Length: 102
Image (cartoon, rainbow, N blue to C red):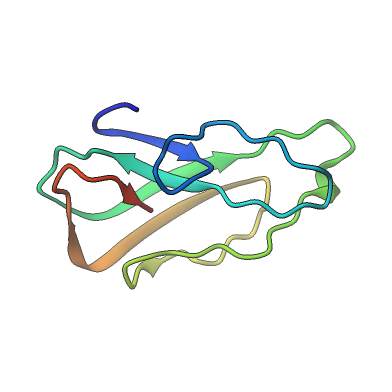
């Protein structure tokens, strides 16, 4: 785990970086700041791109996307495979060195 890093993980503890699932099986992925060095955070911006085999793009679907800490921002995600997020929080989230699930 990288101190002060940002990554995509498949568990809330930011330990699992890879996951295999059967077709049509829902799974969760989390964007996590690992051990932030900042005293507080006010939000985040990121871009994601899902890579799937050619011809299978229509097989990808999202059940839900949750934003924590009473977040505000562009919650309307238009492209399941490639989009940008810009999310802020109404009050700062303490950095404190503990992992923060975005």
